[in-house]
Image 1 (tube, one colour):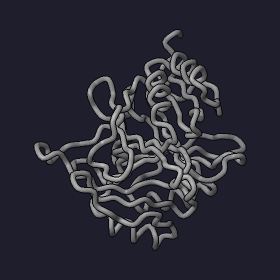
Image 2 (cartoon, helix red, strand yellow; image 1 turned 30 degrees about the vertical axis):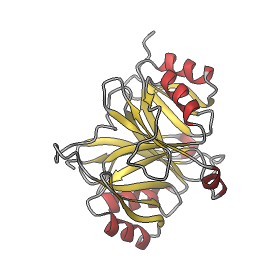
Image 3 (tube, rainbow, N blue to C red; image 1 turned 135 degrees about the vertical axis):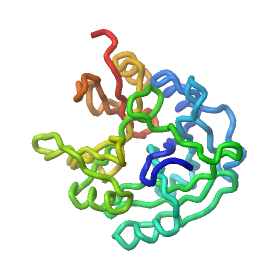
Image 4 (spheres, rainbow, N blue to C red; image 1 turned 180 degrees about the vertical axis):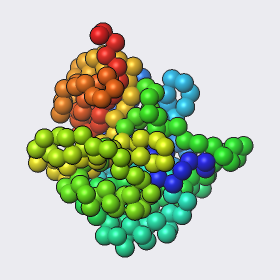
Length: 268
């Protein structure tokens, strides 16, 4: 694919109830989650998330009882593009991270591995198979400014400096600028090439473990927030203004997956 190494190119919701997720995210974001599982995802219930522009925002993996018994919990997971999954998995292990699921290949999908950084935040590394008619295809699951795309990737780390050093060394990201978060310390911005992809911060004391939080673009933060609360979300942070004049909020969906929303306030 034509994406850079280190780009977030896919997002996956792990949930115990895909039907409830379809209703919830359809109301909040405007997505459509497929009624039927993807036939290429042999052995698991995997459904695509479609945007209203016809593009794909990511996928939904339905967690089975066996998966939950093994420790899986509802969450959002990001996929980072790498040209060599095996070499990157080895580099992660050598840097103190963990390979949770070794590299494997899915026909017509690509090669991937499920990994965690040295502090335990999980993510996938992924080298996808491009469409046969478009070998230079570029994923647009991430966008800096469009609704129904993930717009911001935020690392919540136990120790920020070593966490950022790990990712910058692995993917070539750059730390560029910071914002004071008071008792939590600096909020450090991350670039991949010319694109500001997100930031890293020290996690709040009540957070159970380091993790990535993904902020989904919405057309109107107040409309989306009301829909989230009405749909059963637990609010972690009320909508607040962020640099640039837009607003963001952080919630937990009804099945337990943490997510963020970002967008304009249409009423102001």
